Length: 360
Image 1: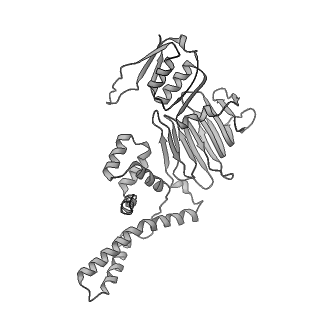
Image 2: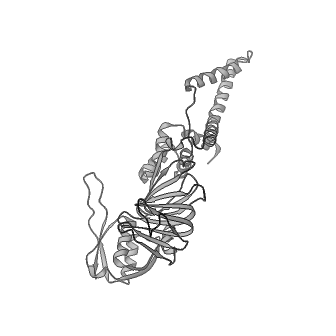
Image 3: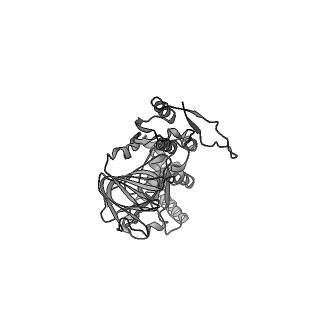
């Protein structure tokens, strides 16, 4: 962006209507985002940059009413121009307008500096009272990457949702997850991150790990790539311990109903490859493959012949869509598939696509 455009865009952050757009941006659909970009002459990257700036600031109201501040500024500027008694009146107006433009350009950095001083001089002054909750959902068939307020990175799998405060408190970093997410957490031994998933809580100390907590399943699966993670369940012990610590390279599956735990030490890549657009099936049954594809692409898949359910499958796909994946699987498995007629709902939207699988 050129300098003039940067100044115009920066002024948008003071607009109440545009602030509402920034708060809702992550949950907007593609068409709505396109409308916003067209209306304000922005790109999606411009809006994301402004969103990160807005969510990271905590402005407090001035003690003096805004009208008094404006009157004082006007009076000061006119006093400066009145000293030019011999100058033509038009010159005074030009000088006033010049100062006004400078004031307009400087007001944003001044406000940002004020917010910075207030934030860092009072790290424990009840910041959670003003922090707003942010919720991000990854659309079907996509992987969404985002940054948490402390700089930690999160990858959200298709249809998954994460919620977190716009600003972390000085003594607490807490987020909640529905679905599947891969975390790269900024290290902080004094303030571990807490991730709630299902009825499980994870305590994280500077770590890379994957959490699978799909609502359709009765388990939470955690794969630790590196670092330290402990797993706990409210009001319950796990193998006689309040906290169960996971070792790097381990995948832990916690059954939420029976509170049983299973440990695996196979290749962690098969559980984390999805964040790079890779789908891996290793010794999976055809039924479990279809279930995973159904969740990833937000489609209903009906297996019409149960004799196909237990067929073992090993396959790897990169960036293929659901139709291409099924076509390739059908080359080595005796099944065929077809789409059902998509149903229009009463509100004018359409129901999820339906795919029928049957033996050849």
